[in-house]
Image (cartoon, rainbow, N blue to C red; front, side, top):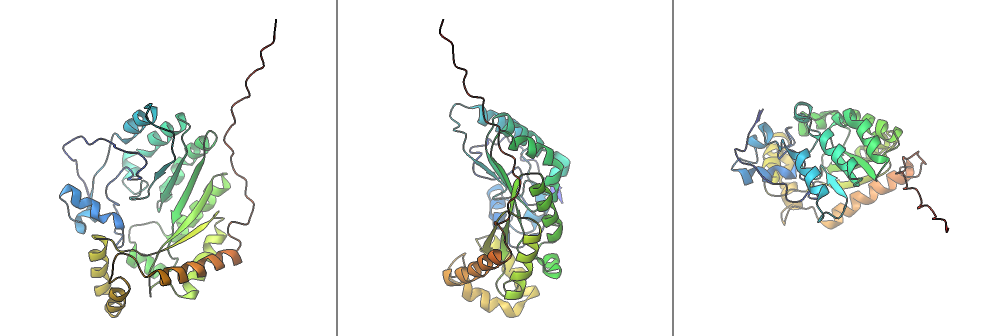
Length: 292
């Protein structure tokens, strides 16, 4: 793995985009839809995406500047929605503490989506931020099958380690849910597999679970189907049938899987259990001036 300097300064145009601190995941995730972004830098969406990481080393500085701008409206900032801000390179560059402090100083609401248990390093900062604004987190856990995890998401923390981290975050008073993604057709979508995943998600204390079926955008599509042809060639025709018209599986299939997950979540009580939550401090009421 290498970290590639861009050789030029690039501005942070919009901190609501969720592009994170890194342009690459830094882990071999065959289905990652962010793969296409590497082509914007004249790198390929396959091996380069897995091995070359582009780092915005001044991300915290730019975030603080943007948050202080009169044009900024204090909108919710979603981090990790394109690439993972707690991938392994964060352990070296330590960009997130500065970003979290900037958001806390601005009392700006935010959320973080990650597969990285490194987020626990910054748990005290998250708790501090939650005292002044709305803060939440979520982990991406599409399945708990160990063999499938090793094949599809090598280099990522074990799904159970992610769920243990979810428990620690919720126990700290911060809402933490699970994005059950990706659900892989014919690989992780059987009733037994879905129930196993939801059961462990419920045990983690997750505040909610959101199922998302695999989608294959350009870049990720070619890489994932290449992996599928090597590891599960018999499934290639079925995937081409499901994804023959675009990046998404048919709505009927998505709805069937989502209905199963929602029903399992209801059975296991996800979202029903009361949990202690940090509440942002309310400003003191204005003092009543006395008349002389």
